[in-house]
Length: 205
Length: 205
Image (tube, rainbow over all chains, first blue to last red; front, side):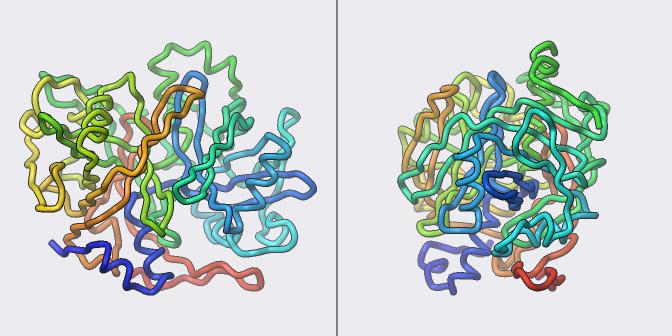
């Protein structure tokens, strides 16, 4: 095995270092976060995670020193935001939203805003799985001055039956690090684990 | 598009509901967390995310009402833990660690503990990418009484050169929800996004 310690990472140039360190927590879904206060904003995030089922909370990390700042400001003001899944058809356009645009990313990246009557924030019409969230709390992570945005899901739009969700059918892209994208294919569903027997393979749908 | 609101989710049976809601934040890497106080513990987690590069912090959500409790207790006591990536060869055994075992998951799930001289917590010998972390902080998320565990990376073992990390070569499994596993294949690497031009495709390695 190759071995790397803190000293090794500290001596890398900052961009390469950031690129490697961002890989070490594994695959994520690249997700488009839609928000709006004075203007519409769309930004690609991947640090999004499940916080709990009752109530249904999703967490998201925002770095205040980045282009994600506009998203955080909009969410604090309007209290609503959207999560929009990506498939390979809109991958390049979605990645492009991470550039520093002065006007709407929707227009510049050729993605289409669409609205529900319950949500002030825009959804992405090209996305096949879209989630509407209401802000519950923004927690400061003092150790490095990032923010944990906690939202409660209040509506979901899906192009396929959500009870039979094979995510790879509607969003076949995972990301590792800042710029490496992977295709996903359904592999196996495993039964609820019990101490006295090995997990069984289940029907995927 | 199919439409689902809170009322729809509230009327589902709890297990199906948990299963669906756990899918709505996308793909993750299923990761084995090694810890130890009196005894070794190994538990599968997927809510693990990048918190920052300087210092290099990784966050992880722990639900105190689950088998993840032992992991949280061990980490609080010993201050050290490990993240171990999974490939398809050890997927079933890794999934099995989520059962409620009374003795070591290593023995029951046929995985091999291995140690570095800098870390009291066990690594998984079968894993091709292993990360050692020192606890920095446990933050209570009061809104639903979960815990955010924040650790700083102090060493990394990788079977391939970390500067050319194609994660799918050493850990080709992503998870969505509690039990649906996907195979990953490298697809495309995209250049740093700029406002005035579309992202270019880069060499993956």
